[in-house]
Image (cartoon, rainbow over all chains, first blue to last red; front, side, top):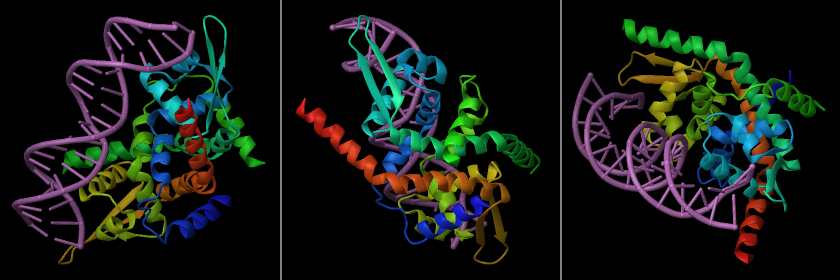
Length: 133
Length: 133
DNA sequence: CAGCATCCGACACGATACTG
DNA sequence: CAGTATCGTGTCGGATGCTG
């Protein structure tokens, strides 16, 4: 199956160095951060306005939304379109690059969806064991 | 292609709620955090000792390594095997669940490997635009 | 509506020192 | 070797208030 291949590929990619001083690490940290993943996920469904995103993501502050959106735009993953109306309408959407990221990213999110119960169960078992000790 | 399907699937999964109060978010935050991704990646290559991981990940402190390893073990992604020798030998490896995560995760890492140049270029362009004003 | 500026608390993280 | 304990700092991130 494809999954085994992917692991093998990554293994080949990763076994030869320590990742240290890799210029991609900050970008990856930002892109896989708490809010960025959710923002990108929300934008998969199509373009959103600022307030729409604020509602869709749920629990995010305006500051963090604005901040993440700016970082995402800087990396070329999200496009910011301003309509010169009054009041101003700002629309965010995924760029082509952003769409290409959506595949792997939703693959990861999907995994959490499928295995969430196992993760929760493992944690409970781990905690009860510690309590027993 | 499969990527388009995946996006569509995630879209269906995600469009109906705001992700708020999802019990998986803390786990996903932890698992996709700065160090956890690198630790899991390192373990794809096979079991590692503590010191080996410390060298492989590169830049991580003992504290963070220990802390992340504990969290990963709590979630059932990593197994911790202690050999009762002297000095003690502790070996970490991916569990079955951890291996199943490796697929989606390396898919994401692979994407960054393939598109790293584009991300860096986009940032430079963005920054130079800002400088121009 | 779509942000930015500011203040402030919480915790992530690293450096160091200590243990079995 | 494989950690734990403690301390100090930096950044994350929320609440509030203001602008255009």
